[in-house]
Length: 327
Image (tube, rainbow, N blue to C red):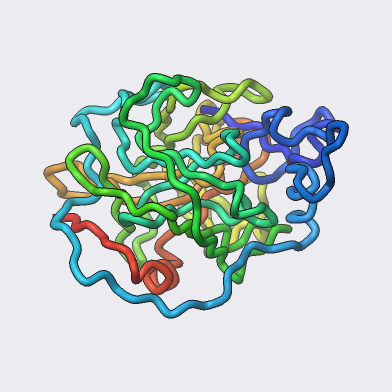
């Protein structure tokens, strides 16, 4: 998967890529108002409002922990081997993979972390109308109408990190609470949260999403995966991004020469790592697809939200959910 990094608002006016969130852009989803359509319900206007500061951040809430939770395991894929190199995944291979829709149109990815919470990028929800966002789980072919295991839920609450900066994508993280809690079983499982404070430098990062497979290319129909090496932040600050753009809340992954990357349409989706010494190949979510420059360009790795910088925030805002164990 490779990424065309384009701001949605300027996509229709400029041909060259620029740094920005890796959100899917399907013209029918953000078209200008049709006859009789008002600004109030036009997705383009809602996105523009987000760019200039409208927020979906919810106020703090007292959460009641669940009385009981089922015994379950997180981070297990539905097959033991992986496809590597930007290829299609097996059907429901990553059972926590979430597809976000806006007014019924795919636009971002996410990851199920409990029975009722999905982790995504803040730029995937900033300024959007919560009532028009839905989450699809157990999806593989996003245009198929015959996938019997697909589960769909509306979103009852959007929790955008209050440190999110839409100018530099710092703290680009958000939580969606599902209106319909999911039943965790052998098929549907959440991903594991990452080991605290671990930098993951040198790990292979596994990105999954429905993003484009070439710069300015169409977004994918079937769920794809690509493996990219995770680099240290000090090394990332020596790339074309320079010494100041990469904050401690970010994580970089990619090859010096480019070749492979996350892509337009992958925003909000997971960058996984496999926990060391785990016999079951336990997958943790180390990063969230956030932003980058161009599409798998040399000297410009993909940039991700560093999830373990937000562990306390995630847990405190999902205390009403049932989590699964790594063991």
